[in-house]
Image (tube, rainbow, N blue to C red; front, side, top):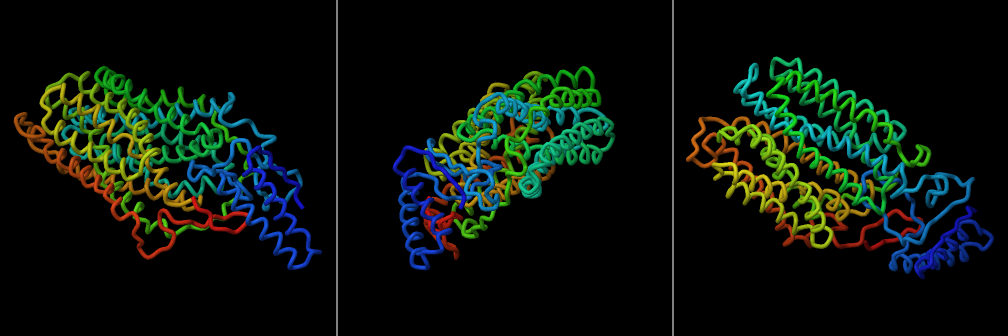
Length: 526
């Protein structure tokens, strides 16, 4: 019998310890016969239920949570240890004795630094594509090409679409995480170098669009996997710092890119960006190391809870997510061009995009706080609804620099934090890790589809001459209506609150007990 020790000071911890001891005794003391075994199992079950209700983690298989979904909560004082020599397939928990500390220490902060650098610089590049687009559409050989925006949406869209592909690989082969990051980093550099020689639109679509997008999603999920190993209790802080780096870099990058484009042209600017990724990101790759060795990763045996996909919250979130993604990135692509059509300076055009990037940070914090303290249907409605209002009332009527600045700030605040809800959607729909991972992947995939469709459609809608007295200055009228209308439809997901208690043919809907895989088979209420 494995020797285990549970340390803790709470009554729940003591009952968990007693339950564990009784369970192990029932497994090993066959001399007592069937009646004795059943008695011990019953006592363990009663104690386990009591401990669970009081918040203690008991007899549960613990596997590394790569994406921060369905994190098991336990008493801070309680830890479970196993002595060496136990069969790893029957581990109740993973020993922490020989591992570096999480939530602090130089190795954890070094990993966060590397993740923030990748998020800020490599993901900051797609967020500045509006500046590149404005330049390319006014200079040969891509002058007046209406499909230039598709390049930008491919970069971001492929990153989302690739989630269902890379997530299972990341979980199954953790020993290849660092190699995946290195390969993705090289792909992004080669993509930018290749696009600097582009003379036709399909050259840009293949390099700066597809290849850079593939490189990003190959990097992104291994980085998240490592970060989740290093930060558990302080994960919110870690993610806030990482995501905030994109907004911080997005504040300055548009000005730098605009200055380089005007002075050196597109080929030299894009090569300089590739060189920057090589010099600035390359050294930080040394900091990106997993906390857990590959031998401590075990395949999850949790089942897929099909009832989660019939939950009203899943249906509401999916409807809202697709239409929000259809519109979300379009202002990032078209604001600099819109500003140029109003005869604003290049600096003013870049500033609108910078403020849009920066204001997302406040939106992410605010919406994240709202989702933690109120029903998810509240931010599900408020975020896209106020985004739609800002589009209809400010962007469509903007004829000068001031209204565009106000629009950039408000749109960034209300729409920028929407994707923060994905993890909360997943944890609210199911307590099973495998189900949570696939829910997260599905939401990302929906976002990628909406992103690409929106980019293609927007290229068809932006046409005609600029007439400042007309809504959306004429040329962008239908684009403004598309963005505002899509956001308004997205806000309808919040009305799912009225059917939140309905069932759609499956058991275990929101608010009811969901079975979890534990050492003692039992229904656990979340």
